[in-house]
Image (cartoon, rainbow, N blue to C red):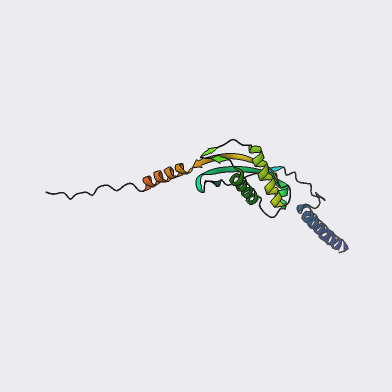
Length: 172
């Protein structure tokens, strides 16, 4: 009888210890006491296209359409509570609108590196830190106001064809 009691007690202890060991191992506590640092690296984020009106002599002469990409440290992006995209877009719009050199539908050559550096610095200043590492150009185009009107007129003609003459009733 005593042997049966000892065997029963031994089975209970082994069952409890194996259950505890299984839960401890599944939770990962036994394998890693300390979490290893995550190597994040740079993350590239593409901005939506921005349309910046070019106003010359009080009227809109055309639009600069720019697509930009910015890079930021992935670890920093996870830590901050706000998306830097809004600040980079705002800084790019301000830089193109205020300092863009557009003359009568032609983009003049100017130092693109300075413009992109100004966008980066302004965005980082608004974010109170060094979040944005670099701003890159995906594409920059200028669309003249007359080209926009021509495109609108062309698409309107396709959707609304001109009315045809009235059909006359047939006489017998």
